[in-house]
Length: 405
Image (cartoon, rainbow, N blue to C red; front, top):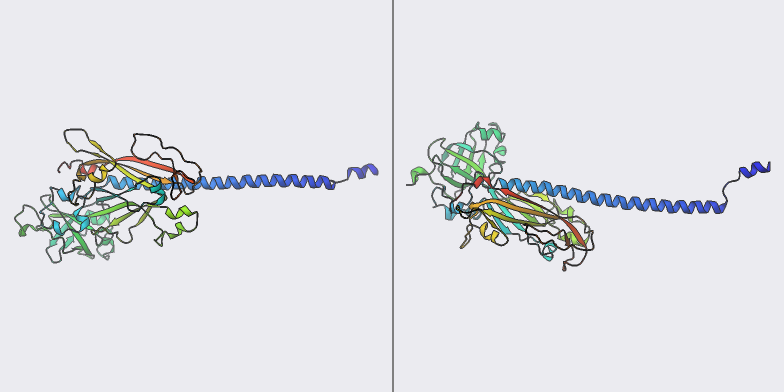
């Protein structure tokens, strides 16, 4: 009986306390490890998401640059295909300086950029982005206002999904008010007008603004101009701009800036927007392309001399070569650009490093910085955020034959 009781005896109080304390320490260790593993996994997931978003956005930028000049003009101020120049002084600002590629300083740099010595640029591209078609004009009536009547069953109209019983909404998605329209006459010369509105139905038409005026063959002594029925082609010309921008004032994006560390307020995003012919953004065209952008830069390959190899245009020379073609004393020759090398740098969402990395000395275009400081006044002080840079050289096939100056 005594031996049976000894075998049934449980843990003593001391043994139980030791076991509970040991188990508690094991639980704390497992919980801490799981917490840090989860935080690390979430951080890496956010970095991967930001990287993937920047890759997708960069591909969008590359596609738009490669299409620059399509059904437009490489440099309208010097374009030899332009019919007449009487209307040129009346062109709206963005039409006067119309070019396939125009590069400018970005006015929207943040503290995190300037402290780290980054000077992002912005790029303005012109081409037919809303449609890949030219539309035959059944008739163009001299105004005021000038009206362009389209062929409702033409290939271009079919491609945009136009139906004769529809309202003007389908047509206005391509030929929106404030955009430019390009008119090609029967001898291949071009003119540009400003869209004032559209009319749908069985006789779809585009109404143009009174300025700039158009050349009609019967009204001038030029060997070009609008004439006859069905002898002219028209197409849309879009002007798009990529820029780094603070979106905290936009209600659609304000939630991205709420809370977070102090440096979050200075974040910038790469955006794409379309401009009207006054150079102002068209409502409803703003798109977020990549978050946490810290640099956007360009260098150029140009056929400056047809008898020599192409030259490389870098640094501040880029702004002179592909700047405002209508500026006073401008020497910009964007029609001679044959390729654009571009780079986009984005930082990680979190500043998760306490030390920077020395920039690698390199002859490659674009930044080689791998970390940037989030300190508002000193680039040598923590915290630091990691930087990813994407680079590519994009050929401009639409202006390969533009050799005039």
